Image (tube, rainbow, N blue to C red; front, side):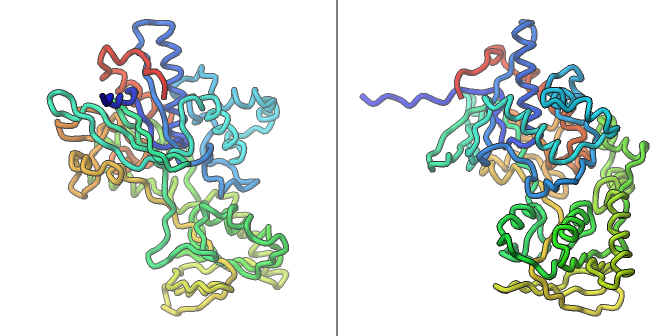
Amino acid sequence: MTSTPQPPPSHDIVGIGFGPSNVALAIGLREQRERAAADPAVPAVSGVFHERQEHFGWHRGMLLDDATMQVSFLKDLVTTRNPASDFSFLCYLSSVGRLHDFINHKTLFPLRTEFHDYLAWCAGRVADQVRYSSEVVAVEPVRDAAGRVAQLDVVTRRADGSLERSRGRNLVFAPGLSPRLPDGVTAGERVWHSEYLLHRLGELDPGAAPRRFVVVGAGQSAAEVADHLYRRFPGAEVNAVFSRYGYSPSDDSPFANRIFDPEAVDTYFDSSADVRAEIMGYHRNTNYSVVDPDLIDALYRASYQDKVNGQERLRLHNTSRVAGVNERPDGVTVTVEHLPSGKQTPIEADYAVFATGYRPGDPRDLLGDLAGHVVTDPQGRPAVERDYRLATSDELTCGIYLQGGTEHTHGISSSLLSNVAVRVGLILDAVAARLPSAATVPAQGR
């Protein structure tokens, strides 16, 4: 007699991706269960996360030694949700013996490498909730007796090629951001996206001495790449290409920074489409295509010193765009068009680096036929509730929540660290409020 395969254990949350957002959620789950152990009135919420990387990593290719965060350390993974949490950045500093050193540093903005260490420290402490080397390849419906989709099976591929399933009453998508290149540009051996800068540089022969780089982009990453290459390769010429007249400073003033407050998310969410567009237009300079003023000053100083010394290693091609890229085994030709005149100039370089931003992941890519249950707005984008739950048809009763990809509904902080702790709290509260009584006991196993 053939036995019937047993279904996988059900979790209250199955998380897809384990970057900072879902690490923060895993911390929230742990703290929720600790409260539930002390107070039976608090529901325990179970969860498991899948991450295709072998271990935690966050923009490792841009962990430049002297680059600092653009967000206050107080906007870490927990503080704005739970100031007493022992997962805070300050607790991390205490654990590694640098608390007083940091206090004496008198800054709100830690080194990016240091903040990455903090994130990895947090991820390591909740590692029991995550499966690394586990790539999600499909999401399949699990229907109840009435035929409604009450749960979802997340199908994952392990490093050995085997497939596994995790069943959840709720999914939380945190797929992160994918590097974006301009139309007609393809990444290659000599054409890179800034996301992989340090990886690519690390692959170069130790004795390599590149003669010329082209860096495309006007934002913080582009400026950091230009600065890094200029200093790392003192014999190389760095050509910075951007459509603006010059690098524009980011607006980090106190009133403008209110755009990242949780209350600003409420305001944005409750606004009409026209008002949302106006708000985004007014405050894009807090985050998009802008550069830290100190870095702008450093680059200008380098450019000016070059002119004084008659070498001009840092060349700024402003009011310009890339009109073509031709990669060869021995180099790359980047054709730069000067926008006012239309004149096109080919630049022969060893490597071209495009710091041209990212695009958010779309959960519908993994949902398959279930994507048809997702409600969309007039522009075809997913409709999202205030608690970050995808709006779906009545046939789908389980919850699908988004951490990222909600800028059109929740504003500029959608993919940033600023509101991650508060967002996690909203998602946890929403999931806990929808739990059936039988789901208050954590699922066994993973």
